[in-house]
Image (cartoon, rainbow, N blue to C red):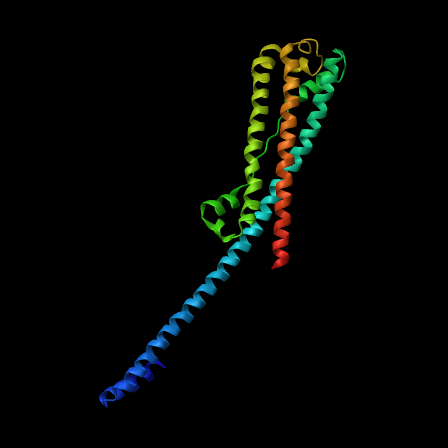
Length: 235
């Protein structure tokens, strides 16, 4: 089309018809501009489509990551509840000074058991540091994605507290004062020790803090899964 206009324009110029020449020249310019605008619109539509596809890919990956974290968090929550039952039993035994209770040795030995959270964050870190978080232009959606991962800070804080208590109990009391073989059989050498009794109280506190942190994170991830489900329904 542009070649045709150019040929006509050159013929008009050679014939001295400058008025018509300028009209055709303007028409040629308009056609070029329209072509550019169409190309830009096509490119923009293609870009929007690619962004939507990338966003949907992130949503699927984030949902998978949420499920992995939830599986581990729920397991840790159940584990913590079981450990709290052990600690509660020990607390009652010590409170009543029932040092010969046969439950005391195995439950005291169980205090050496620990288990901590190892979060999955690869997808979220890629989303955040690549700048692709801007694909989620809704601020509420961005916050819904970030919120569960921010709960990991609280989990690490309380788990570190629990581990520090265990480390002190293990290094400064058990290693120095207790035979592990004897600990499984009798409580006579350690049950009355202040260090042991204080650790039971401290472990009760740290385990409760762990449980509450896990619950907050579980709630936040479940909320995120609902948001993702609603997004898929809208699409």
